[in-house]
Length: 192
Image 1: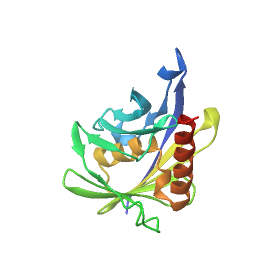
Image 2 (image 1 turned 120 degrees about the horizontal axis):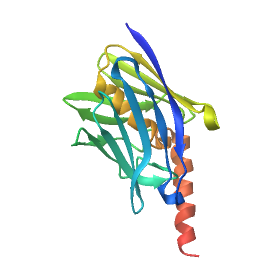
Image 3 (image 1 turned 90 degrees about the horizontal axis):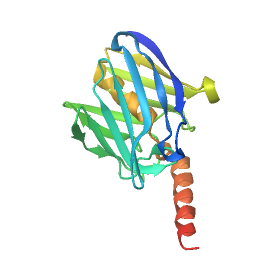
Image 4 (image 1 turned 180 degrees about the horizontal axis):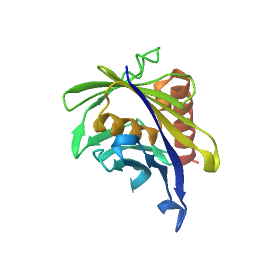
């Protein structure tokens, strides 16, 4: 099985008002050319949108309830090349495989799941292709690494890239508990 590794560097644009700050990853992914992930690419009230685009990858967006700078899976909406994609997940499942985010893009079934208890390691899987994503480093040395196993195409890479800019803590039980407690505490602040 063929294997390729691509690394995107973290970038920040903190010019202007803090609500206009942008963050993300960018770099060259071999035959796919330049790839860039931007979060939040746009804001709509309590919703943030992350966007992945590049030389040959379809423009892919993920919008969801804001959690820090990134959208969360809560009320998530995915679009690939302008086409809306239905997302499914079992938030009550006990295993990481059971909590996986499921989607069907261009007639292909995908699963996006946590591969470790930490929120930095994720894997996008479809029949015959696996893209392992790892975020590592701090500050200016922060990077996102994609390890591609199998004959991946531009849509596969676009999905893995956009999900790097989404808060996916809910794909683990511990992350779901932390996210619930954080939302509850934020909700209580509204009433003070």
